[in-house]
Amino acid sequence: MEFQNLLIADNGRIRYITINRESKLNALNKATLAELHTAFSDAFANPEVGGIIITGAGPKAFVAGADISEFADLDVEGGTNLSRTGHTEVFDLIANGSKPVIAAINGFALGGGLELAMACHIRIASDNAKMGLPEVTLGLMPGYGGTQRLTQLVGKGKAMEMILTADMITAPDALQYGLVTHVTPAAELLAKAEEILNKILTRAPQALAAAIRCINAAYTDGVNGYETEIEEFGKCFGTEDFKEGVAAFLEKRKADFKGK
Image (cartoon, rainbow, N blue to C red; front, side, top):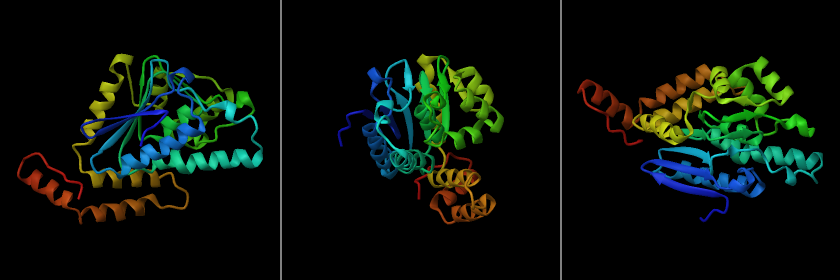
């Protein structure tokens, strides 16, 4: 499929998804969200893809927010449907994906852009990045998971402050708060993302997927994360990758995982 708002490229087992609306600071309009749903669905289903790096085109922005022009004519029902569709089709799809997703934040990540980054499993940022949830300045509030995921990542107090003041934070602050795990010079951002993801891709794919499910279970209402861990741990013993991992350990060699 040809995308109008995304660039898709593969580097080995890494799938790059780049939001390509640089003149709009890569803002998320409905068309881009629909393409993200397709792109991530394809990447998760493709056996040749081991993990995904998502970033924004150009040096200024990862994603500077949603396309506010599309909000102007919405009523309560329309706003509710907009949020629910975004959650289901994009943000939850990424968060619950079976393959690791790294957000490489290259500049502004505001509103829906920060929410997109927070849906990813790991976030790293360039040293010039700025992050925030400014929705209350528009008479809105975060609607793509921001109130929930920011609280999980930085704690209730800091999430309250960031959302209620609408202030942006710097990349070093985001690192201190636990919102990102690494800060790099802009020129080194994608190399650092690849370094992390390539290390992850040496591990057993089914074990990675199981670990993602278990970590997410810790934040899912009505789910006992400990029971999820017990079940997923047991399932690992039925995989070929487990047998290979143990054999490689005992034979003092590097494991050759097949994702089976």
